[in-house]
Length: 314
Length: 78
Image (cartoon, rainbow over the protein chains, first blue to last red):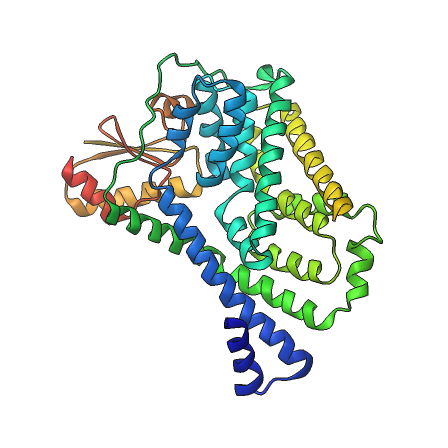
């Protein structure tokens, strides 16, 4: 419905036609659609979040079996907020509660990968199927990656001595009136939206230009079946692009529609969200460079494997 | 009254400290504001999502950048 209306606005009312009309139609359609979805999805996630905060997750995971821990930590990573600026207290807080290092990493992998901005962007650009695949494979990387890190006996790589607590932490959901939750969720949504709406505009704008002007074979040659290293290059390129998921994802969508393989696109987007240099720099204050290396190597290769697997199946 | 801002130096933590200062000034109450950056001390409060706001030794908020008005309300009710 909105697709037709935006077409009418650009082509009939404003009189743009041909390539320019196409690009403008795409731009208007995508921008409004994604803005709307961002607002809706971030609101829903932050509303749920008014019950469950990170302190709750920690208390919930304390004393649970390792298997439950990996799965639970990865699942909680979807709904709880994650800011790389909080990575240190979070990491140490989990260790303090005697949550295994591997389980802590499961959470540290899942939380940034399954952040609400990335999910809303994916949903708006690729639809629910790709979003579900992204979350499913993301959880797999978090569970298996965390498990592998835990098996490597990396406890000695933690640089700060934290005295473990034997107290059983109490897991209680946050108590708040419904109106207060709505208000809090809305103010959070507005905050995030203000930070990223311009990136969306920019990303979709450049995307619309590529959509209208760059020939398909050009993109397919470099990112499609013609390039066997595409997935690895995509992952390496994704690492420095953290926190710009809102601007990067529209470009990926356009590249995909022009011949980039979906597995390559998925790997790239996972690398953008899960492997972040700022987070690594912050974590360097509490864990050794060796452990950061292991973390990046395991998550990075997991993402690469998913990309190739996906390209081979589809 | 003693107000502590827990944070390891993130942008939100600095912003919360600023907001707390303004809230105290506007509320007309006497309060001492302290920024706690020592990670061990932050851990002792059980806060793992910074910034945290502690009033007279009690954690009142974690992971949130509260506005000046919100902090004022908390100060006045405690």
